[in-house]
Length: 108
Image 1 (cartoon, rainbow, N blue to C red):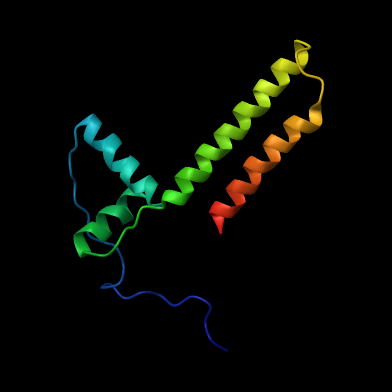
Image 2: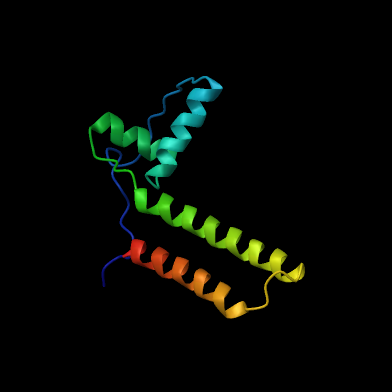
């Protein structure tokens, strides 16, 4: 029977620490850059130091923005419906469904 987890050697573990100071705006930028790559700050810095790729996941940002757009359309539809300015829910559902389909196409 093999072990499910194998203990890493001292060379394989992250045991060394370094303190790096940033300005508040520099830290915000660092976090933003790491988040755009779906990495935490430590992994982003490790990859930069080691010269490994840390590609920006643009599609993630696009999906997030399309999601915000869908929520905005839903809020607009709700407000217009409550004010009696629209009465055809099907037309608004079609707009929302097209936005969701676009988001799903981006995900692939």
